[in-house]
Image (tube, rainbow, N blue to C red; front, side, top):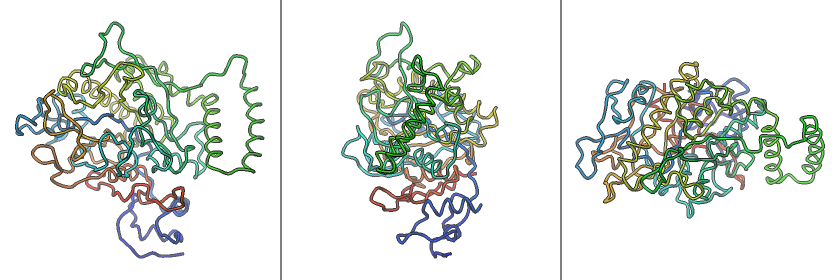
Length: 481
């Protein structure tokens, strides 16, 4: 057994890195790798995280958080929000007047007001992985990119041999990131770990309310719909007995194939095949997506929107034990013309927020917190609200705010979080970080910490190099319970 000298930095379990590394020998390149982490877990030397699950509410487009959670009422007119700060359930914490229901949950929420990155606009890779790097193309993804937090959760489930009765540990709703624009944005994938650790990604049919006017840029409609499992029904004439017979025959072919080829492509095919079979046969999974199982009043409470329905299903999934669930407020225009803007408010920023975005977020976030709390799940579920970037301090000629990555807010609530906390500070214009800067890798490290996963744990990329899953990020100690 080796004792490695080094930094006394604390891990997510409260142990120092030095103590943790005593669990076993490290690779020649160093680092706390998966085998050592699994050994420490087996030996009972890692304390479990306070969060059993996490629900990420992802606001695609870059939410104008200076008009939501970091208002500057004394700023010059060319940057100042039209909205007023209002008191909340947490002493000294003020948020936008148009978020009154969210305000009632700030005593359970931490607002980090000093997040920034330099990886370019509309780049979701940093927020999902902590890897802050400029990409030449943000409309597609590559298998060489680092894995997302959800993919790491799925990877650990497989490596630990945990079976959830057909349930994955990573679900992404309501569609893959970028589907509504006919692109595939990078970030929420298995990356170099392999596609077998991608999320179970749902499908959806977004639509506007019946009789509503045609949407246009700067004048979106409310996006209705619900996520659904793809290919979840047996074809006519196929019974479960026949399906199991086919599965047995396929397994024989698969066994032979694995003996002759152990490439990542074969592993990906095998996992996707098993996932497809689980979707067809798992009662737990199908039941989680059946909103008819919920009281109509509760469905109404979340909001009968695509975002609201997806968030209610997220609660149902974590109740079943799914570890990482992502719900994206996505943009739907190229495939289905419903919402051109999402949170990308270049035009009519204040009208879009006041009339379309803030009411929906206010209702759904508060419904989720209320529901989790009533079911005793809030103490074991971490809720995160974040975007891939923020928006400019200066208001443009179209009454909008443009792209900005230099300072914005992220919210964390529930399990593992010291509620009623403000962390970090922006300058007087909410333009740049003034105090206690936070990187996207720090945000990811905090989420890992709350889940009981060491953010400094290393996994091998496709060339065999050990890579820290949080890319050097440190948990934000000032917001941890």
